[in-house]
Length: 92
Image 1: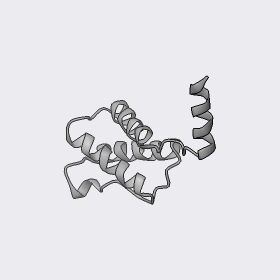
Image 2 (image 1 turned 90 degrees about the horizontal axis):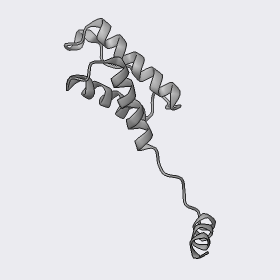
Image 3 (image 1 turned 120 degrees about the vertical axis):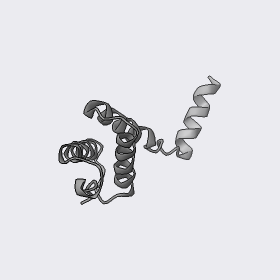
Image 4 (image 1 turned 90 degrees about the vertical axis):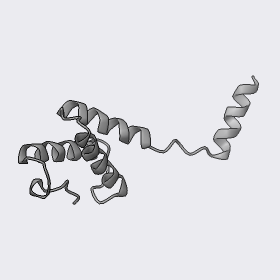
């Protein structure tokens, strides 16, 4: 399980570290991201980076984290049948 940094390793208080961990866990559950996935690592780094640049409000960090994950989702696969159907729709 991926955990955010230990507060004793840096300038985070225990309360701040708990908040960041809570945000990370919540987004992973909501978006079904396995905690040992590369996406979880990117999410953890993003949350910490946002906190480091001054985004210190829990709700704001949570919304930013959700935005990151949702923007990074891959678009749906465009199968040849789907493309053919869309081209046919445009012709009419």
